[in-house]
Image (cartoon, rainbow, N blue to C red; front, side):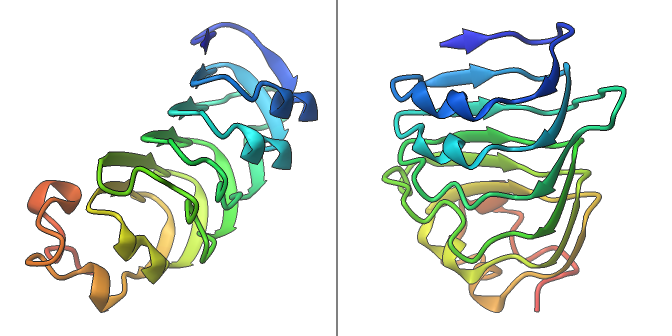
Length: 164
């Protein structure tokens, strides 16, 4: 575990972070981190909780494309809100998850993400997907069915205005 919440860590996350293959909790929120998320983060196969929200460095925040995190097999909390991530949510986002039958929280609020929520997320039984404050245009019909996805968003799925 590595908890370094609300300190003054600055700069970019190093690619060597991918060497922490046994880490389960990586919480570095409310610091001064900038730059892109290293692709090597995808090698953290045992990671359950990744929290990098609210970075406020002198040179900006965490930015760039949202990685697919397809190798994070055990992730149940992914909190990247209040940064400057851009582009779309990848089609294969969290595709390698082995905990699709468990409660999974993905917080991407207040970034610069656009486009559609990928329909591949239908594989999750109990997903809380938070995308407020982005430019998400649609949520596919398959994800908006409250009967099939009654646990999604605590039963609120289908009640949002962006369902296709």
